[in-house]
View: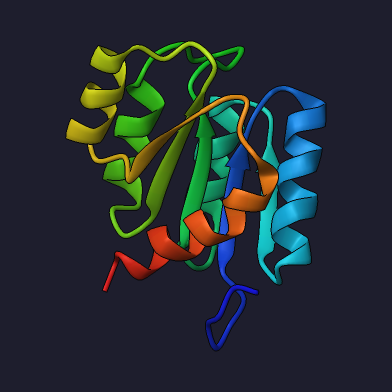
Length: 129
């Protein structure tokens, strides 16, 4: 169970419906408040339209309107306190290092075990302090 006085606020950005659903279910079951979107444009809208910042964002690297690290850069500028976990099935060591250099908390390679997600989100959030 994730621990915080208020539920962690999580942004999930993934265009694959089954993955998005699995992430939302897993994190919701852990007590998180989850907002899920399918593309970069919707992610930017979610961040800029939110009354409070997201604690953690789970961001797929390849989206219909973003195929590189540009969205990561934009999210880091818009909401620097939000920890970003980049998810990809197409990562290289060079891309992973670049993502970390640009401020990603970590790179999670697909496929991954859903039971590892809640502890990782908790760890990412705790690293803010």
